Amino acid sequence: MQKGVINMNILFFGTKSYDKEFFEKLVGSGAYHDLELTFIEPNLTPETARLADGYLAVCAFVNMNLSKSTIYTLQKCGVKLILMRCAGFNNVDLEAAKECGIIVMRVPGYSPEAVAEHAMALVLTADRHMHKAYIKCRENNFNLSGLMGVNLHGRTAGIVGTGKIGTAMAKICRGFGMRIIAYDMYPNKDLDFIEYVSFEQLLAEADLISLHCPLTEDNYHMINKDTIQQMKDGVMLVNTSRGALIKTADLIQGIRDEKFFAVGLDVYEEETGIVYEDMSDRILEHSTMARLLSFPNVMVTSHQGFFTREALQAISQTTMDNALAFVEGRKSGNEL
Ligand code: NAI
Image (cartoon, rainbow, N blue to C red; front, top):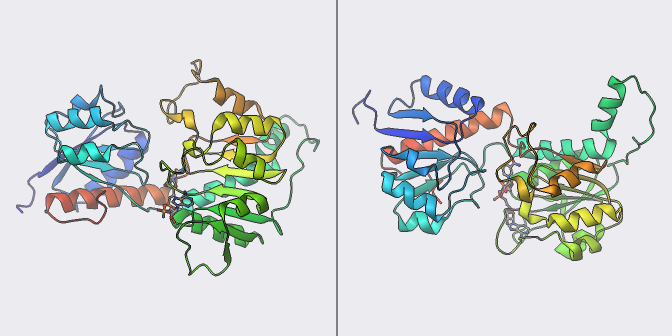
């Protein structure tokens, strides 16, 4: 390959300032001089896909709509490669990409600890009412009413999915002195401190349930009225995985029935269209989010589990390595 000649132009959809900062810094370092990056703000949707006209590759994120219609438009634009700058890909129609001869690559693991540490931050915030304590102290209210939490030490953590992030979360919970039980169809034999149990047993025994499995057709709404009923009273539930693992209406009913001591959500069913956007001067379309935010024991964040410096460095590095492998006709190992 001739050095200094641009071999691939990549259109970045849904660019935020931090994407630009990390990717430009990396490409500016010289290792990726065959790649030319163009950053635009709109998210990738069936309507915006035509902006990719003339680009060989597009780069998209977890909150975008890579449905069949989007992918067929990308094909018409001449796109040959979709670079997902994330791990999850349930928003990509892989079948359509195959039909169109478009290769899809992702970043399978960048910093499992980033997501697991955020999951524990949600647990601690909701359990110890940090969000309320912060506001109270700022207003010179040093009264402790409404702030009582429970110890994690000695309690049981139930980890659903012991892949990279679930393992990191299990290790964190172990550090807190918790007993660790887990459910996964493929138990990891190296994790000798974990007791693998059935999903039903996990629901019945865990004081803290943390979801770390990908969203599939089989586990859609795995947390619903029936499974909530099987949980212990006063359970804590955390979801940093995918919103549709939980049936939100049933969760809200469970919270109203005082089933949960604390709930931490980094992802939720209605996040498409609002996540990563400043909606502070708008009226939200979905009332379920407002309902969730009205509960004092619920902590919601906006799909930010991945959002650490280390994770962004790793995401940009792997995404550019994926692009380079494509340019050089190699497999990166991250093809879907
Ligand atoms: P991984 O592929 O390393 O592990 C997933 C594990 O879940 C595997 O061990 C698999 O056997 C297990 N699993 C699959 N279906 C299951 C089911 N129905 N019940 C129980 N276990 C099941 O994935 P990784 O990297 O740990 O990521 C997990 C999920 O975290 C991703 O799929 C994604 O949805 C989410 N995620 C969230 C982020 C955030 O910013 N909040 C960032 C990155 C990932």
